[in-house]
Image (cartoon, rainbow, N blue to C red; front, side, top):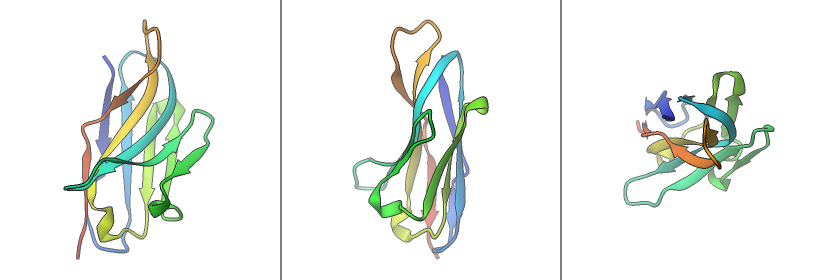
Amino acid sequence: QVQLAESGGGLVQPGGSLRLSCAVSGSIASIKSMGWSRQAPGNQRELVAVITSGGKTNYVDSVKGRFTISRNNAKSAVYLQMNSLKSEDTALYYCYANLEAVGGLYTKDYWGKGTLVTVSS
């Protein structure tokens, strides 16, 4: 069974930084893309950052220049470095991995349970 576990959320002041981590565990054959999405109260979930297996990255416009996504393939982990945080970044952050499980016939998306980021003075 595949599981994703996020960590690193918390309370930070505007202008501060946080680093989110996500570890993938279980019977994994291969991991394709990985990424982070977020959902603020009353808002729809939005995809924040994506990184392919080859290291190509893409970001939503609102975080470009402030957030950096990276991954460690050896550890089956993905990270999100968040700098210059703003109050509007407050949300529950979820990591995902598009992967093929051992014995699976195709890839599919797996999601973590989320970690809360609160940006407030």
